[in-house]
Image 1 (tube, helix red, strand yellow):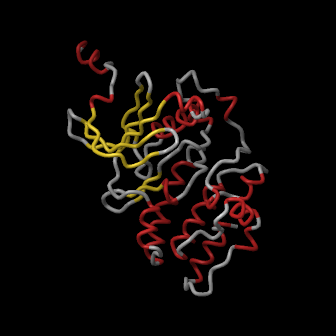
Image 2: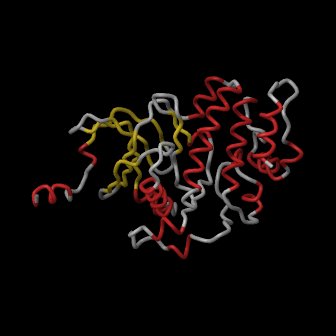
Image 3: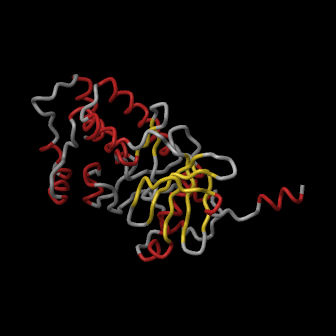
Length: 270
């Protein structure tokens, strides 16, 4: 029993995994598809350089992502299998989803049928709801952060910008978290991705979980129309359209969608 207990406390290292390919690169590191040598299981491992995370003030975002993924046990959320660190790098070991991300699907198919859009939107609503039930807000719902499993079902990922609830902090034992610094009823941080962000985020007027539902509505529009409702080549122009959304939220004349679909879009983006 003592030997088993001691073995469980052994520090995990990246040498227990064999990198098969790199499936993503970002400002802070890489995502590798890896095989666990001992079991042969396939995982996605996010490898992040500590020095860059510190320089870019991203450490708290990584801790938030780790916390929410470890606490939210839902079939709609990417499962965090393990996390560990070495001298220069932090690692998050996650389940590997063979279907890739939802943006790749949209690029491939261009426009989805209403039946397909209804299916994916229903699953996305369940995913977002599972986050909100813990009092958290994702704050960066976009096609890139929606992954697809081998059976065609979606899972939500990337919680680096998430607003973590008091409930999760209260149950967290990491003394490095400063609860006072990060929790309040209204949020004012300007975070997210321009195409999918809400006007109240850009206006810094304070917002709640409704901003996630608005992002779902924008993605639903994109599924049916082929592009986001406030798209433009310049980010500044996108932001202007988002803030003045009533003027720019229109279904193009050459796009035929049902009255029910249009009504849902208007209600979610409103």
